[in-house]
Image (cartoon, rainbow, N blue to C red; front, side, top):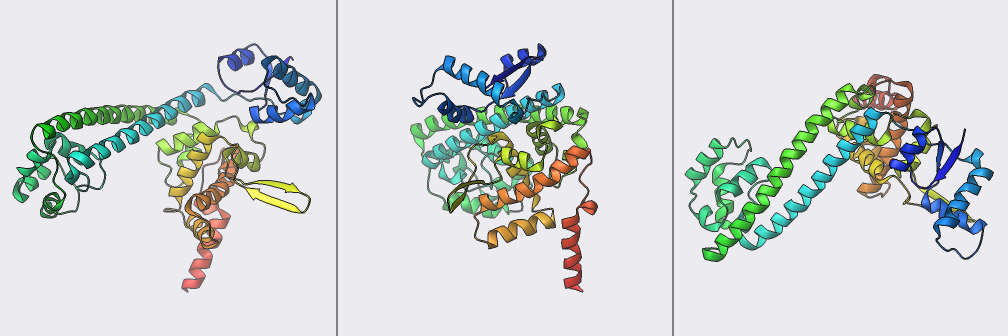
Length: 355
């Protein structure tokens, strides 16, 4: 069977090669850069020369290379939907930050009124009371009536909210305030449109996840939910042969440190060369899992006690979780806390200490 070495593992060229029956080997651009030194010291970047290097490395070092395995169509489709939703969330964050900066100039009282600026109740308030002039119409009684009509479920008393409005710095009024109010409505419309599309994609993700053979594995993880489980599944994939060991998975996810050794000097450093999408998905899950799983909480607590900051402690926890996930994934077994040895050992120790 013919084989091809290439720098990227995705795209129409790779799909065409796989459909034609070629075995595809992916050599990362950073790896290719280091391999150029075999054939010359100039270090130049030339497409023809790189093609020769790729072909010759495939001829001489094929036993060291791992052929590309393709995920199923269901996983590829799920990955596209998950990443599209993620991009929309990033756009929403950017628009919300723009709205926050805008309100800081023209209507500061709206910033500290509710917990989240992009929450439904906050957006509804800004649509009804776009500037300082309209907010001045509110009294405690009127604000209470408006909150009740809009289904406010917060625990803060309306009188407290009205006090926040009254004590906040005054916003712009008059023609300038009206002009800024139009900008506020424009930003609100953009955020609400994105929220609608995010919800629509979330519904589509749940449909795709329900039909995926590996759904039970990832939805069984603590606090994984639907969208987070779908993201984990999509980024890890379902080509089991791609990761023959859990260490291969943790290295690609960038949650295992890289070690450099020269003589008597050994340096353990952050792994920059990693799948950023996979690392973000795994760390997002791991960081929240500690609130529902005592084993995860204990690992995180001990990492912080050793002096690691929050991101580092989350990566340590993510590395531990990937070993668990890899085992469940390879054996097609959902996560069961009762069969998690480290978790059960910790629970038994807590019971003994309590007794």
